[in-house]
Length: 357
Image 1 (cartoon, one colour):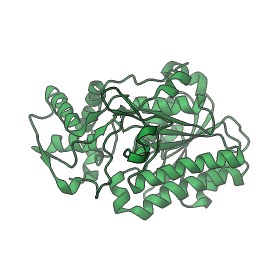
Image 2: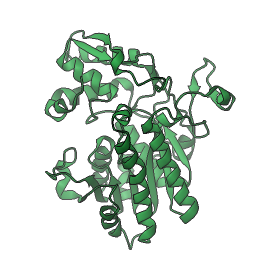
Image 3: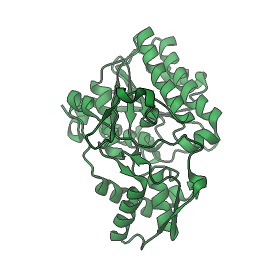
């Protein structure tokens, strides 16, 4: 049965929920939902010199905060130790270096954060003898990469020739980020096979929405359009399956509650669109909302991914999750973009220092 806001309290009221990456984009939205549902919400966030929360600062008095670094097992142990004595806790593992471009700029940090961090979390659970209901490790659609010609017969296609990606599709990661996330997925499955840790992996397809770092394509289009007469982009022919963050959060929740340990679940909008067309849609909606007039698109080769590492086409088939739980996207591209544009327009101070125009 689909989970919505009305049934969240029944599923999560009083339940311990532990969220890594809780101050990030998706993590902050999930944290809000868990607090609203009455969960005993515990969050693990990266320690900084200022110890300042950003996206979940308004929840400070309603959550238990653990500051540390997933690459430091001592700090992970300290947080996980407090989960002993309960069996119905759910761990949402969302912390990661999640930007494809930055994975080329900071490859070692990406590796340590995404792979070593995941291993530390899983190993701490084993070392401390903690029993949990479910561990949801966030994967990514980027793990599928492009179709390898030798594997073409193993893929599924729509009648129009467009690629359909699902849980049985071959994987072919094309970036350091995608490879580290694939390793994180497999580590989660390894610990299920070896120790019975009830891990599931969710491969999300291109979440977007309020609070997302403006270095991602939706945010970079909106932030440039709000402040410049031109929007500079790289490869605009690539196609992506964009899914609004609220639907993404509900996907995580459905998998965590009903997913079978040891399995992978994918979800997204079930439609894709080229970056060129996504730009056109954003510009049109922003124009109707009175946010800008007619920013021009400028192609900038330096913004493209290096070499042959770009992914040409992503389009999800989410039937497995839908059959199991009834999950399906509820927010249209038009409505999702209106909400996202509105947030960027009204919260300039939250993103202006993070742009990379």
